[in-house]
Amino acid sequence: MPFTYAYARPALTVDCVVFGLDDADLKVLLIQRGIEPFAGRWALPGGFVHLDETLDQAARRELQEETGLTKVFLEQLYTVGEVARDPRERVVTVTHYALVRLSDHQVQAATDARNAAWFAVDDLPPLAFDHDDIVELGLRRLQGKVRYQPIGFELLPPKFSLTQLQRMYEIILERDLDKRNFRKKVLSLDILQDLDEVEQDVAHRAARLYRFDERKYRQKIKDGFNFEL
Amino acid sequence: MPFTYAYARPALTVDCVVFGLDDADLKVLLIQRGIEPFAGRWALPGGFVHLDETLDQAARRELQEETGLTKVFLEQLYTVGEVARDPRERVVTVTHYALVRLSDHQVQAATDARNAAWFAVDDLPPLAFDHDDIVELGLRRLQGKVRYQPIGFELLPPKFSLTQLQRMYEIILERDLDKRNFRKKVLSLDILQDLDEVEQDVAHRAARLYRFDERKYRQKIKDGFNFEL
DNA sequence: ACAAAAGTGTTGAACGTACACCCATGC
DNA sequence: GCATGGGTGTACGTTCAACACTTTTGT
Figure 1 (cartoon, rainbow over the protein chains, first blue to last red):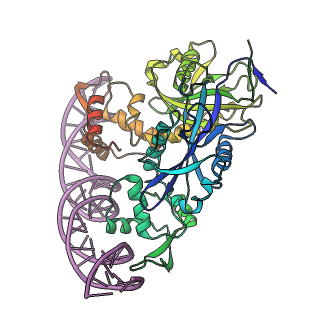
Figure 2 (cartoon, rainbow over the protein chains, first blue to last red):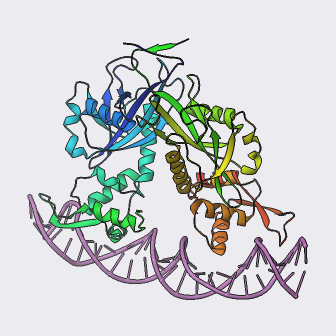
Figure 3 (cartoon, chains in turn green, red, cyan, purple):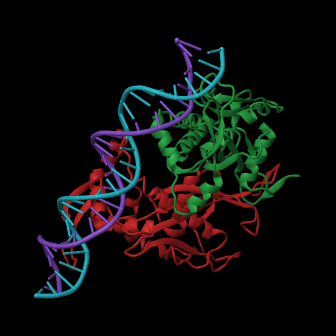
């Protein structure tokens, strides 16, 4: 059943830069294209926006369909409308970025019909379309935002050590942080809950575990508090 | 000549929140709608994206057509895709915000076929569609961005006094700033060019005039400098 | 001379930065 | 007992915030 309009319309899609974190790297989730153009190339998960769903819903649906991911942190990034970015026809894409706990999702991502895999963000294969620009955009946004919004916790397991937390910031911001200053700063924000637990099965002194106290954070925000690393 | 597609497509538009500054207020440029829905209501300038233009080009074209404005500072804001935001059909809009020197454009804006006028941002009439949300979004973005990017100069005449500059920040940020601290801070950034000129025709001591030195600013950015008010 | 806004410095508090050693645990 | 990472405090410099009076100019 075809659809007809008085004026030509661009196609509208959503694309997602999904970030995950492991011990050493920030990673991006890519899927391998089955069809032309760019058949066989790696690309961002994404697809067409349906008439009965918001942009956010479209992004989540595509993510679910193509990678199995659900309930992730997801935000809109930028809308890309270069005229010839898709060789077939005019396609405008609303890009998003998502943050996931890599440990939870490592397996699922590869179980879909199409091939899906994690790649280190600084060692990506050639990507389809302008997707490398979009990844770059997502990375810059993440680097900017992680410093004044507590979104980095989305990349960590619910319980984490201060060292893990520091490592996360170091990997994202691509610079070393001073251990003592970092701990002083983070603890002074008073948004972490000390769980009175320690790491298990480590070959050295076990670190204390903490949890991001979202309740407390929201309360402090309401009182004029400003998160900033 | 109708256009037909295999799947339904949302209409795609651009909308612009155009900010201007006068002595007392931050203002927004609105146009009065001629047709239903919301006939007679005030709305943001905007319109459909053509197939042969980027989003930025579409926003500038609509701005030119509806308000006469050209060569303004323009950035993308957010893309709004709520399913029922337009009662007629699905319309996704890529919103933008623009900053203009009000003094340059006061007259032109009202000369178009459709009625255009400036309104104080904190005293807007009822707006069409979800345009009040979009204005709110634009205002928050401006408030955030003006503190770490030198975009505020786009609202001032090329030559301005430090008092004007301070006033601009006070109006946008909606709080008073300390005169001495403000001057110290701004001058220490070393991105203003002292013009060795003073205001004319004022009924009191005339203020020195400065100009934003974009060349110098870019150089300093390259050297790792960080603008922050 | 008066009204109106321009212009100017200092001080204390808070914060950021640099830096090195002992501690607990598993092997 | 040794290797590995966990955990801690101080001193200095920089930045921020609070604060009031003199100067210039036009009427």
